[in-house]
Length: 69
Image (tube, rainbow, N blue to C red):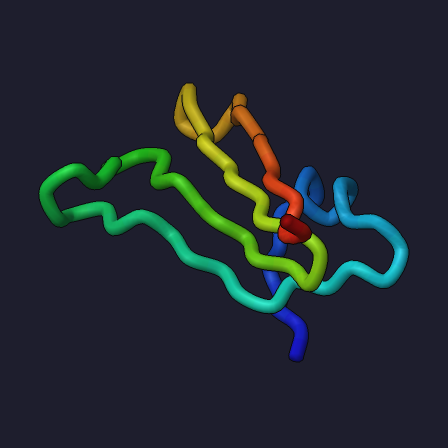
């Protein structure tokens, strides 16, 4: 299974053999949501990548957590 529409900045972080298994996006309209730049989580077969866009998507903070514990 592969996802389309993965941002280039996320695709550039993927290592060889890493595949995106799931994507979740913060709701824009429910309490705590962001109308202009919702947060996103990408689950891969190696790690979890968090993307927190700001400045209407012109800038974003990206963090990741290794899935091996």
